[in-house]
Length: 114
Image: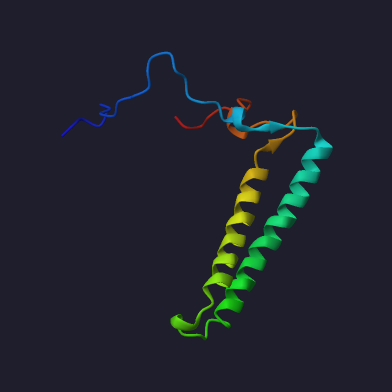
């Protein structure tokens, strides 16, 4: 068994290759565009997820049908609509303004962690 202070994990990245910066995936936009994207993408995502559950509910007739009588096309359309809503919301979280920062990047507060 290894002592608790010895790390047995190795880093498989080649030398000189840094961790990818999370900000490289962000899209920097003006504040007005950020607000518009956030509002409408959230509205669309919520509507899509609710609509997907309504389609699943319709396909199963409020979960009362036996499995052999479920309408698979409507059920798959409902699941697809839920996935589209989730993807839209996840994509919209990539937008930020130039003034926005990541809380983990702020070094204003000292760490009380030891």
